[in-house]
Image 1 (tube, rainbow, N blue to C red):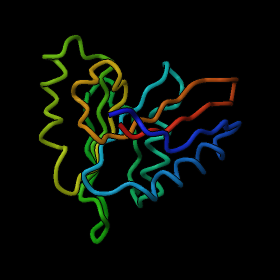
Image 2 (image 1 turned 30 degrees about the vertical axis):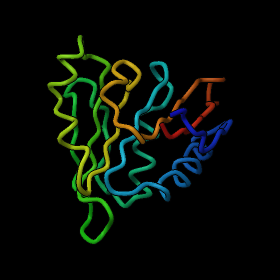
Image 3 (image 1 turned 180 degrees about the vertical axis):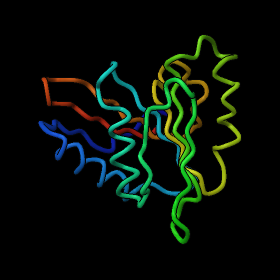
Length: 148
């Protein structure tokens, strides 16, 4: 089944990225998985941080590059119990990426973000969201959001 484009934006500031993240946050539901792609410095972690902020997360979202996986408890009463934020940047092989245990997190009231998802697309479930970030200038980004 081909990917369906949900939206495409050219943003020129952090405020523009924040508006896209806010729109995207409104369509997310429990059990969703979001793969993020883009070169180093494209803003993957920032996009996760902005999206989680709109969803009510008050903790500071940080890059999981060196720890592989961060877990954030969400406030009670919302649609999400926890947000998991993974990063495949340092995964050396499929076996290494499997050790993250993401398939166990793709259930229930979790929301899962995976940076560098293109490295192991076979680990992304059917119906996952894909956020593609491309640097188009010093403060400009092209953001494309699709659903697989």
